Length: 215
Image (cartoon, rainbow, N blue to C red):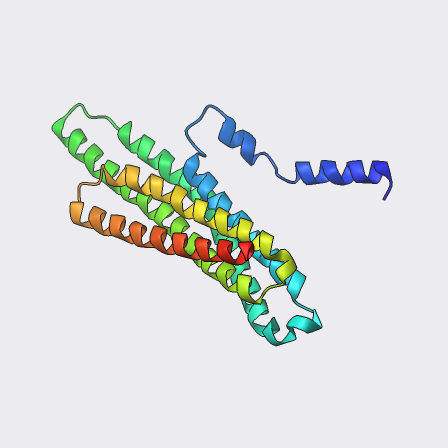
């Protein structure tokens, strides 16, 4: 490949990132950590798809091909949903800000504002909870790929596993912050336990993948 062609390829790869990083870096509260967590999930799913594509079609792994195709299809679906969650997370945060900006001059306005804040906060919890769940779904599939995928791409599975775990943990931070303001403490405690379970699962799977990589 000629030097100009190599330069063009490098430029195309850099430009393919788009302006998401610039949007995150801007002096606005959203997109923020929740959207970045979802984006980590997208990257994790993409790495899993890559590993599938590097394995499917090779005679050596023919026996695992039906499962690999199913995993690839599921990772495509999960990646598409996580892309949507990038936007939904930013929108949920904006909804919370809008609710807090509602007037509170009269008792009626205060009551309405309080109700709208609680609705918005629940949305700001539900979105990162789903981000974490979808990230865990991706991580479970990556754990399977560590066993049946092309071993030459095991390091890519390992990177994907770390990104998926980052998606889960990152989402959990947003959940925790918003749960502190939820008035329904029973619901808040249930969500907190749900997140704790997902974090524990993710840690176990990521450690298993890393152990296979080191072995």
